[in-house]
Length: 215
Image 1 (cartoon, rainbow, N blue to C red):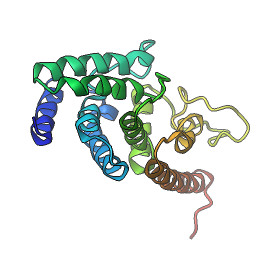
Image 2: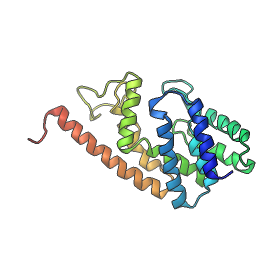
Image 3: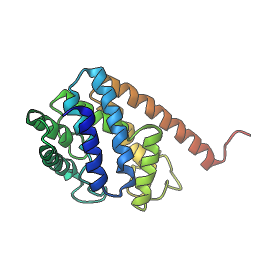
Image 4: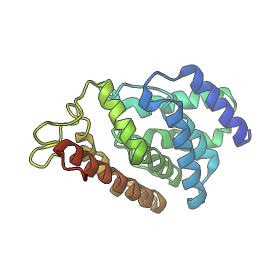
């Protein structure tokens, strides 16, 4: 099976089975696939492993506020392997694909043991940063019923972040730590660039909150 046929099969499978989570929809998956192909090319890794892993990394959805959240990537890996067996994908790639999907998740805390797993993890984490990262963070905060920011200390200057209560706190609780967790050089460079954009967004937000905009 060539990669074009594989991608068509994965897309059809996801369209039939994905949940309605707006932060983990088919557009999210397509962007992760693009990130993955970009990193795979630079790192000269195996597309036969990284591409199906990227397509299927969120094929099993667990809500962000579920106590099973840290099991989501393992459940997705099992479902992905069942699907790939159904379409007769080469057996020799399945263990590496299963590991890449399991290890991509931040909350799972699984060590990445292969270059392909490191690439898929980086590709997914890039989705949490930059303009897309801001949009997805606010979407998720809205779906969880979080307020946008803490009225007295919007930017966590004198308190610990409480990202279940305030969406902007998630920048400080997690998102700004992601560049240092990147496993590839290209992923680290892009993550740092995207975080700089997010900090500029917060500077603009601060001005609008405080009423200190330029005339």
